Amino acid sequence: MSSKLEIVRQNVIDCNKCDLCKTRTNSVPGKGNSKSDVMFVGEAPGRNEDLRGEPFIGVAGRRLSEALEGIGISREDVYITNAVKCRPPNNRAPSKLEKETCQEYIQKEIEIIKPKIICILGNTAFGSILGGSEITKFRGKLGIKNNQLYFITIHPAATIYNQKLIEVFKKDIKKLFDLITELKNGKNVPIDIEFSS
Ligand code: URA
Ligand code: SF4
Image (cartoon, rainbow, N blue to C red; front, top):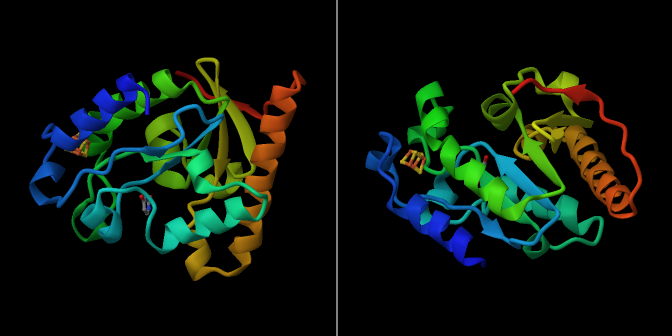
């Protein structure tokens, strides 16, 4: 891990800037390959993540790993993080204040890793990072904000309750890596939406 990222990680571990620090077991910093072309952003840690201090290690994480493995990518190859780094009690959605307070960490992760594409997983990350809502209308699309590309898809947990979404999610993940390949080959990729900063 780069030393700059190591500092962000330590700051997340020690953070007490919002009330979620009072109820968490562990903060959950991002994890993975700091040289990755893609950064995945989920909502907030769940129970398993809170206990271990690692992102996406429960059922939703398995769905993400499976989608990656389906196209020959290991989760160690990519960087995985959350919009909010501490678990909200009983997995409630993070509040506006919690999302705003935690933003500085994701902004630093983005600055350090400089991913070619940031993959937004679900509505909370979509709202928190791009100010968007109604993920079902935007999933599978490529957006841009402040010169940074974003690919939007559903949260992998959505595939647990709706089996039909497994294929939708896998197809989106394949499209994401096809886009990365095109970018690496110097091709222009079609941008579907521009988000205002
Ligand atoms: N769901 C998330 O959004 N993030 C995790 O780390 C685990 C489950
Ligand atoms: Fe700090 Fe974010 Fe955890 Fe709040 S959720 S205590 S801002 S790391």
